[in-house]
Length: 337
Image (spheres, one colour):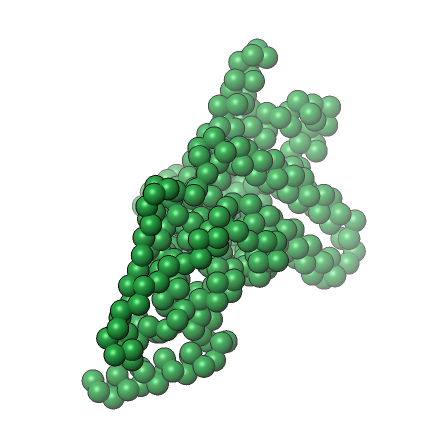
């Protein structure tokens, strides 16, 4: 056991001196501190129940705007469903019909229901950035921002459709077009993640503070699109023998959860880089002396619980190398405006 402890401490010293190892480990620890698995599960839940109302709104609106061009309407729908490998072609959506008043009311209700995933995203991003509850937006402002993001995502679908049309002109250059198509899709995903990471939180950050996580998320999402279908296919095939048609639900939830997880990991990259929350002590098995990054990260985590304007949360640290002296730590109040 002593040799194991010595090796463990040696590894900790090594990762603290080498950022290529220390930074990813700090991101992993930050994800654990924020209970990222539960955040990803919450995002997956709301994404699952928001998907169909949003598709219903999209098909209804497209039915009116493109009523003279049903081929283009179907192309847009197919492009949106293509974001879900293997199970995408099994998703079927209809369209709202009826009188003008009933139709408008139906679209508004479906749109209101569909914004749940963006509200969950706002809560998750404010959580990973350490924004105290007392500073988070009220339900009306949060819902308004969610509606704006629905418009942004809708515009992205149109861009993806445009890319698919361009692909029909490059059929004679298949290898070249495949590379170009992946590059353009990754660039589009980068833009979407960048907008999302910047607008979903009220933390006092700028555009240049969120580009790194957006780049990581775009690359990971493209890998998920390319390689994830293999995983989903096996999940669905194995589940089909037990659950039959419920395998679609299992596959869809699995796919959404994977997407939510990589989105949160990439968000943690932004926070760790911006707040310089590394190197952390690698205390997963053996508790080691806290570093300055440990103190900043865990102090931020505690301050999230401030729920009133007249409430303040203070964190005290006692380090062995300080002779047992206690120090009080508070984050910069301006950093979470």
